[in-house]
Length: 388
Image (tube, rainbow, N blue to C red):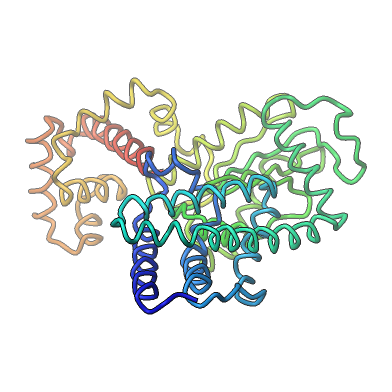
């Protein structure tokens, strides 16, 4: 048990740890290079980790099974979603080390000495947590369903990378179809907690082969003589609309192909999902045919860069960009745009004329409006790539 002065210092260090975790940005390059925080469930329960760890530091109290239950449950969910136990524990260890080192770098000399004195307790805490997780996941992986899930993950990877060979997954419970509808999910909020919540609550079909990833998941829906791509998309759309209001915002990019063409279908579906997220479209189930212009821009980096530069002058004009985006969304009609923005029609006209002055392209000229729309698509895709 720590003495009075040490308790005060540890309480201050605990507060600093909470503040540090709150400032960690999974999209920050430096953070990601230090530890793959985006893939870890550590951030989901980081504040609980901190409270339990410092309870051990201050009072000498080991974390109980009840206290660790949310952490163990998050770890089991991560393993169920496809992460290996070894990978999970390695990421958790790296995350703890990253946070601890950041605290040490910012601490004064007496605090660093105190942290050094408590290093054995940190190791003890890490060992307790790792043991609880390993035991829980070992029990979880003993179920026959888990073995089937693991085989499905391997099969999905082989199909999406083009490395599948007939007979390599000779399991009668996992039948390979003639072709698949590839469905790539992208969440509006890519944080681990939101994505995990979305995965677990989404109405997957029993026949789907599902592989989790950082921003959502990829599912393969079997196609054949009795199930066409159109029928599969219609069924997916019905299932999505039944639950869309109860789930975090997300988009599904879809593309169909035979087994040999699944790598290309995967790239197409992923591109569609990402561009629909970037453009914040109203549809959830999205296909390339509906977004041909946007898809062409998304898949041509050189053209995308050139187009984005056409609206550089609007970077510090959020009101004008909001007006133009709403104008384009309302089929370039003034009255619906004014109603949607709750402003006068003349105000819309004035803002559009300002856009023409700044960019050299008149939004009310059909030909020039097409160029402006393409430029805005390019700019939004660039912004989404930076954020996600």
